[in-house]
Image (cartoon, rainbow, N blue to C red; front, side, top):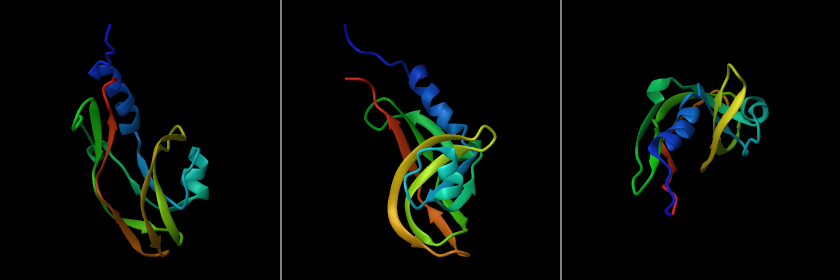
Length: 123
């Protein structure tokens, strides 16, 4: 018997991420909400439902594309190493990924490229 992960199951996981309402640019990889929003945050952007788009994966499964962001306020200087997606209202960390290292300077702004979160079909 083959392995199957229906699109609805994969979409449920991606929907959980797509409910994020804030993107944090962090100096390290956060392990929880407080680390993402307080300890490691260098810059951030509010996110709305328009920040996310679900579709079939590039090679299998499903993907969630997070749109490019521009002019996020940098609140602290440091090397950006990670991006965290959080939901402020329930203080949950929803997703963390690495980013190209870049030194950010407080009082400036930062842009982020679009990126994809992919859950592949099981093999």
